[in-house]
Image (cartoon, rainbow, N blue to C red; front, side, top):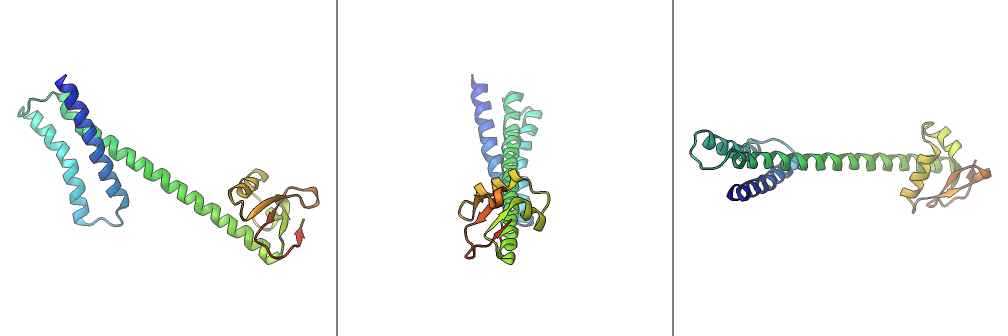
Length: 167
């Protein structure tokens, strides 16, 4: 029973410290000696527990000794995975914003407020599917709306001051 409590406590502490270390690591802009030392000290704490166990100076079971470093690893890894997913989302949102700007520039230059997907692709990117452009309209409802110039799928630019259909 006592081992179970120690294992849960050590794992929980490891998870918490690992997560916090991961957050610091993710937010670092540059590796200074102080930052590297801080991370090494946290990770070194796990090593000290293992060394004490190997030298038989602690009455802890081997499971209890390994719970803290495993918690550190899992906490740090989870934080890194979360940060990677967030970076991916930011990159995807940035790419989507750039595509929106490309479409707006295309419409502005040609003085269009309505354009078919077919013509839009011809002027911008042939690889954009109708489904992709429909998703873009849904993502930017304040800027674009569905339209059907000459009975073809297209979009209406809601921020345009000029009404000249481009089919």
